[in-house]
Image 1 (spheres, rainbow, N blue to C red):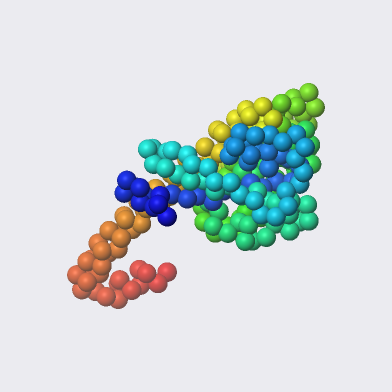
Image 2 (cartoon, helix red, strand yellow):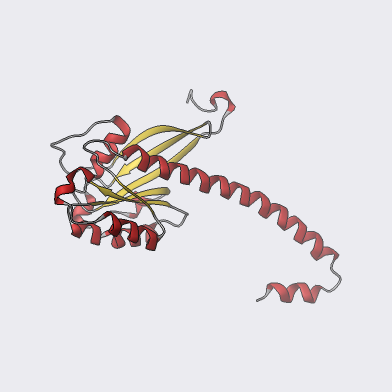
Length: 214
């Protein structure tokens, strides 16, 4: 409770989900971002798990609450509750397993079904340290990202390459979306009052009603 309204500033808390097939390195991406740790013996996550990390954007403190699928994806049971309220998503595949890349479209569909707000989406090709057994080219990743309107980055949770960048780009984009929404709502209010004036001043009410009935 003590942190509420520190310095009178606004507080931002963004929920970000990490999705993708089993064993693509989602949990290690998360622990590398939140705690700068990598577990060589990491087992499938059980139970709901999230980490909260504070990032500064434009001088404002932003908290990213990053959720891990908790191993549910193995049972095709990622629930709608997991996605609820998410405004950002990292959609992860393993560059050494083509099948995990082929699943990306399915994960994007899940996002569309469960999220009704604008979601900042980042396609992540993880395990870039395993270049010698790569099955998915950088070009493949870029093309899919372009096609689906996603950000794209390759990461290595093992050597921490690009991990922070992946999260920070998403957080920055969410922040931009939120700011845009606030601006839009203000201009929307202004527009409404202008319309109200022109409608009350308009003598021909039938004209006004027909313009809105299309």
